[in-house]
Length: 384
Ligand SMILES: [Zn+2]
Image (tube, rainbow, N blue to C red; front, side):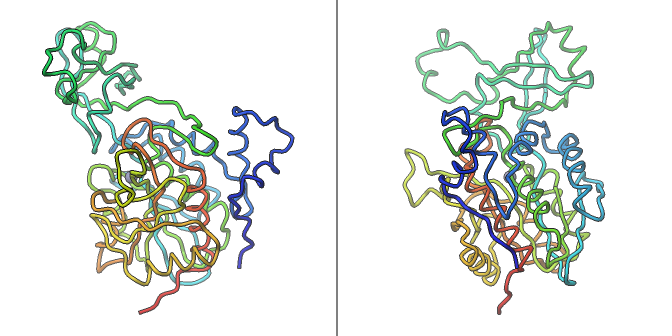
């Protein structure tokens, strides 16, 4: 049994920050001061994770940071061939759960260097070309990081018919400020490129950054492990690689694990924006942790879906149902592992997903951590 300090109310936040002046700048301090399961939410760690670069297949920096934080929380840590970081935490029973979040982010790869030193690229993961023009990037070379910007033909020399159309990825290039010779000396084909964006607060309750997909999931698992010292389940913790290119890491990681159930913690696209109808929102920012009924990769078993909703209600955790006709997550690979593992995705609603201005809501992160804690403390009732 746990003591629940979970509290979304603004008054609680103000109480915790009562000595601070009430100006917008200080709301960061407010965000850093909320409590879930008796522990202050460490949003500084979320910022650290988001600022690291880790395109699919190059998750090294993220893996190192998470590994540093995991050492005091689990009994066993290893990295497998595909780059998954896998750990175990002993439970009170012989039942096991997999908690999985992916470390990789969408990005780009250099495929051509022009004689003038401009870089053409291909996407790594499902990145929307409409979001790329005029962005700052970081080119990860063997000699270090090069700063660059993404450009295209200037508007004032385009034809009438071209204006108003989205620019295709093939018409974009990266300018790293080098001559052709300098570029070929410093950049190699196959070098990875990440989008650059600082981590900022937006409004009183939201954050904006690159890579919330899925550093926010990694963060939620770390936060839950910091809170639940003696879980009901033995916990197989998987920080997976290469989710954005086809759930690759989670598939091989799950193959090596025996578990009674699995939860994939991930960001999911929130379409609660102008131009979309409420029935097309999928999930809503501020509506709490999203419990998946179905997406393009997984259908959640009834007992697990109902059990998670019931647990959320019993612990007064804000939650919503996710029905996503497109898009999947690591649950899609895990639930088909071996003879099958009952799996569900718990998602943090994210606007502008797969761009470098993803937006998430503090309450949804808190709710996700709270539900993970409730699962680890109490288990999910299995019926049928
Ligand atoms: Zn994701």
